[in-house]
Image 1: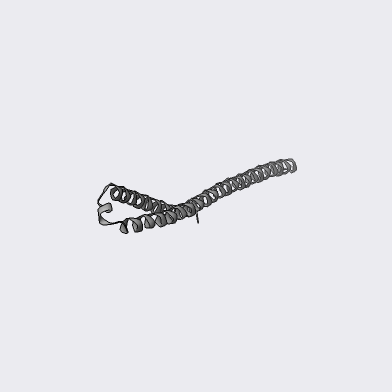
Image 2 (image 1 turned 90 degrees about the vertical axis):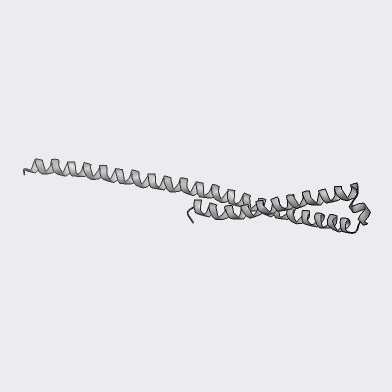
Length: 127
């Protein structure tokens, strides 16, 4: 190999190294960008988790408040004379108690589902 061929080869090698290095830098930057996007998605998922946790707290508070109201209504119904319990007032009171029981069950179910979503979000975040 002549000197000029060696210089040309080295020049080509330098260019090749520069191209490979440039490609590696570009790949590394792309990976970093992907990681940043991934971190952004994780932060968004965490914000959703916090929103769901807040909703769960509110659902549980509403459920507990409703339970108190329902229990008070049940106690009022139980303290009614039997003649009133069997009359229109008693029927309306019992319908109200039944409706509150349905709402209580739904609120309890939704609060439980919020807790279940926490596990699903952890999976989505890769935890």
